[in-house]
Length: 185
Image (cartoon, rainbow, N blue to C red):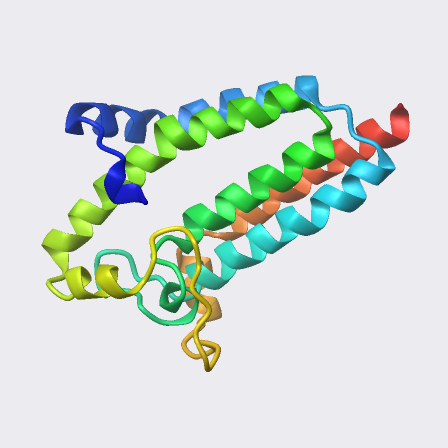
């Protein structure tokens, strides 16, 4: 799927640098536009929690630029952190009850995250010769569920080293905001 998306390298480099500052703009748009209800929270929060759990699971397996991650969630999808981010965003959009946010997040994923994924995969191909074979066997963003289920290798220390707790804290703040907005309405 990602191989079909071709972006010029200069574009991918630029959006990679703008990803974090752009994220703050997305948070502001989300805070302003969200109109959650108790029902929308019941539908959206489980989806976003699944994404957050996937991100945490992936962070506990990832040693950036030191070792090719192929265990745990990396056995079922090459980009579990990005898939987790997509699930978190989708769940929060459902919880926020605002179609415009859905369109905005979809555009950001297509125009920012897909080029960044391509850039990172090119980097991994250069860094790890085994990446090419791994990429042939494991899908980029749509999981393939193997048997037996990959459970080995998660390290809580690695989760902390990768600072994935920041995603958890950001999520908790966003969820608190949504709950307050739903309650205050």
